[in-house]
Image 1 (cartoon, rainbow, N blue to C red):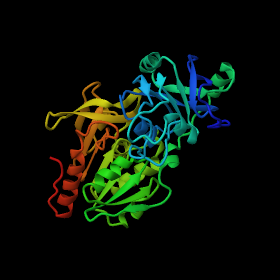
Image 2: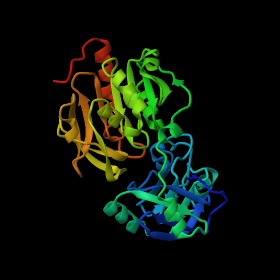
Image 3: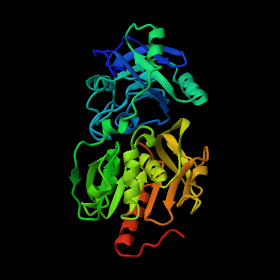
Image 4: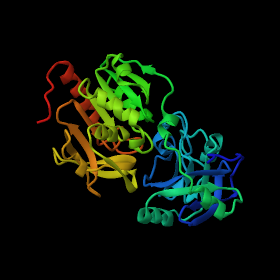
Length: 375
């Protein structure tokens, strides 16, 4: 299936969002024009649409914002999480083409048009969100063309690619120098906020492509390894699971989102697709060790099965207070821990920023020989 058709300007032209169950939403287009296919999901954040657009974990997805007014503060260079937006399409209730903010360098329409991304406005996003919540995420097509619905539904029967990580990972190694502990960050679609959080703690950060082997990583003599967020089904990334298995026990490891799932799979646990996932900046997560609840930023469509943790060397440390899903794990024998949510919180609250401090302490303890296995 072709990702894109021919692109032209789209502001004010008719547009349609067609779901694989046959539901059709008709609205007005903005950004680029043409035809694009992806998994339709929703994000509940009230602000932060630019961070959402540039989050590589959304690669291949058509994102619906539940907050009704989008585009009112424009776009700027300070709130991007990667080099470009990665969403396949953008769905809003009301699009504002008159941004007003002291940082704004332009409007959302021009921004999406520049990167060939279709937007649609003027549809009932509440109805769309309810459909996704009731029936789960599904395939969809966003189009400004006159393609018959029947033809679009036929195309939606074709399987989507499963190599999302290869499209968003860095293609070469790069380094962000620091005077502290050296951290090798495996880029599975890493948000810039992760690197910023490490640099803020003085780390010497080396970012490597997703398919880098454990042997290649250890040649950098790291004090710790960061496993980043990223798109897609973690079970499709067997090469990454193998690398994590080889790293465990050799160096402290901290996993975020996809990195959390990869650690679980590497330790023998299982992951499963959620009905509609967690995407937003308001998810309460309880630390089972302290009893404290943090409000977290999340973006994932897969989760670790709690039942599958039995018989592994992993202990549950954090749990989602809304649905009881697994949100954090620690390894009982090796210096490794992970969380399903985003402690760098871009966008979102910084309640969980302390986890980067925990990673620093873990590296110090391991280097100094003070680390002991989880009791």
